Length: 319
Image (cartoon, rainbow, N blue to C red; front, side, top):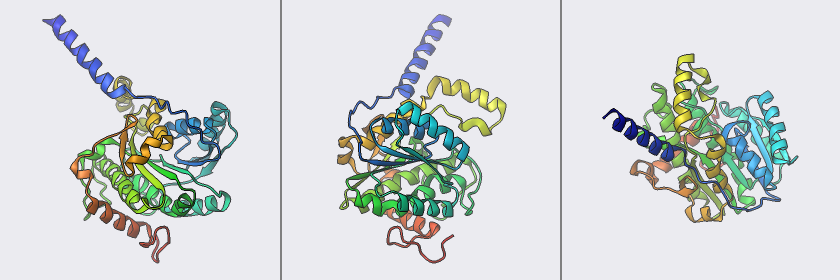
């Protein structure tokens, strides 16, 4: 009996690992010569791996990070690994709306093209606040990309066909948005799940607004990733999570494959506003497919970051 239980447990573990760790590599050979790519959070993790891959394909790649030393180190790594010198680092704090505005102003002044925007910067489930008084998860994971994308949207439109790829997570399905408290910041996991659901709705509404302008938007669940996100927690928690993530989580390189796929594959054009995982479109649950909620979130987000309904133009009372 003991042997049988052990064998069954091993098989179950193997099946779980296969389910969680299996990821299709992006085999599309498409080149990006002459294209300009911006990757927020491109100095580490999935963003960095994506930057290497797209630079290898000939793109001019811009990466951002709030940590300048980390950004400069990543810049050297990306240039070395991609064998491309056409990579640039920008300092950007996604937890500060003024930093986002300043960055976009400088980027537009210095760069005539933007073909692919990848919203990769984000924070894990934490209880903290941005410089503008938003919960850290909702502020950095949703409001930051929302403002940045809107401020750059005219450049994306002028370079159409262009793309917006926003990294979300399949944990979005475990929560619903509460419009009486979008700035919810009580249970860390819940606020994280809500920010990821906001990413999905943001993508859908962006796709709807841009469908006549040649801009394709998609949301990506890259998989559960081995990374340094546990560094802020206790030593015991980090040990437990190290064992767990080693068994079930995937590398940043593997996780980047669906992001790369959505950035380059022509198949994505048929699924504007779609949600992707493992380099293929996936179905969403009903709580993530309500066009009315997507529009309501858009309007609420405009008010929170200080945009008018005319995309990208600041309103009075900006934070």
